[in-house]
Length: 513
Length: 90
Image 1 (cartoon, rainbow over the protein chains, first blue to last red):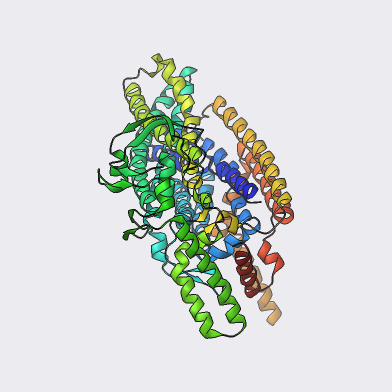
Image 2 (image 1 turned 135 degrees about the vertical axis):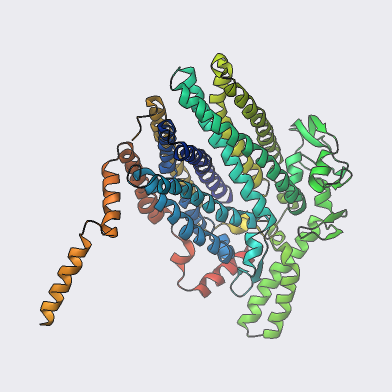
């Protein structure tokens, strides 16, 4: 049940993430193009904007409601989880729905229907507000996801069995949420830029729409480069948050089993498939290339800092920093499991005491629960190795994301230079690379989500609730059925979208309307 | 007399609503003309409507009931259920 529910959520989330970044990235690019049209009055910019807006509309239409099915799953497959976090998730998702969707849906109509019907200024404002609305949507979803990675600003109520929000601002302005939001949005700009550059390059290869292609690339490379630089900066911030708040995720990202001071960062490497467990004798790597001291510095801004490995995290006993920034000697996973069981037992005893109207006993158990709540999720762990995520998937996904990220940094600079010199058409290999860059950008982005979400396993809420406590008590058959239904539906929709997109691209920009 | 005033008021409100410069009418006309003028948009809307039908009428109703809302009527019952679920899974 757990694995099928996780697989279904992963499938639907990965699918949803095919459309969102292009909305954000392409939306920004075409808003800039329309701004240029507004300022210059040149119809070539209007024609360009309308072409990219058509592709934006196709992506937007196919992407509609792909996020809603994630919410369907909360109520069906993850009912324990959705109840447990309802107070926290409810506010961000409600704000998203009321504010962001209404904003998007109102102004997108003006964006598509309003050419020649409203003033140029109003139309431009509507285009920008559509993109801003989409971006505001992203804030609230990412705030909710950030809370899963670093639960804060809440108190657990054993009477309602819910986490109740006590500090909205610490949830909204959580350092994890801030980094995550900017990293996600700026990485979306990379996808938007790669999309525009790839299609423009195709036009150049076909010797069509050369002026439109060059001008489109001119805008896209700047946004792409800015997005990459900012994504690297915020990615660094995110990794520092992970080092402090999710050290097991960082260890998995690095394939790090035995920590040390002055720890190097693995640039490239191959994990040893013979290593099955953190406590076996097999070496972790077949080979690796490291940047010396880099992991210590990037994690803790100290070249000599100790970065714990999986073994250190399992055994505890090293001087570390807690998720809330407190320096203390870390405890072992065994000890965390003991405290987690105490918390769960205290919950059971509290409920029993309440039923028996024994308030003093209820109070005693409530205090035990509160004292051990930080390890509540460990009470569900049967085998301590369950707290180790899939190291290989996390490790390779992280490398794919980072290496592609740096590829794009060089790529956008190269494209800018070649386009500036108007020599792109003489380098077919680069034009074809630009077309290939479209799926590479998606792979980069999806890899990032795999790092974030696979790396946090088994936790659906870090340290508080593992996935196997979060799933509903329902028949696995229904989850399997809907998994395949989604797979078929998504495949059909994706084929439809790509077909419509390719047909529209091949047709090319229309006359200004 | 009251009926006459009512009819007159209704006539005036209706006339106002169908006046050319009425903002409500302008918005409705804006959307109407926008949808009517769509070419590719019609195909996309068809895809959207089919997709929404499948998601909300088929999937949501038959495959994605809200477990807690469908099994329990009150918040107290839901919290009791989830509490027991968590305790039993330890």
